[in-house]
Image 1 (cartoon, rainbow, N blue to C red):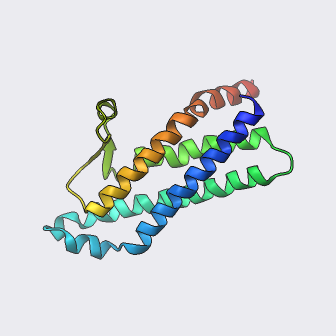
Image 2: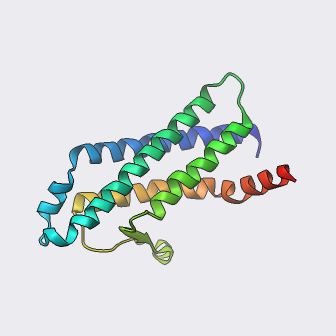
Length: 166
């Protein structure tokens, strides 16, 4: 990948991560576990579910903010460092995109078959708070764009690193 395209990818990813972090931060600042549990018809049943869901979102926010900072450093350097940029994009793919689509607490899952039909690819384990559902579905569109753009780093970056070690 030419350096100018790599730099454009870094800039585009940097902007997307800023959008994602802003949405997550806004939602998490306005939401409490007790607030989510109280709005549900079966508060006892959903406490652990929402606790895990919010925990995953907090981890995701931290990872996105760290990746955003790393890409910012990459873009601010006087000399564009190709290796640093590739590493930063690889980290975005693994620590942000994968964490979104494969949450630790498995509060939702992705069904790739839905994306071909135009429906939302995120399937929730249970009926959830509408605001949380909207945030998750909104984020899924941004993460899908990131995944499509950074999928290259899933295979080529790892292959390049392995070749360098031999």
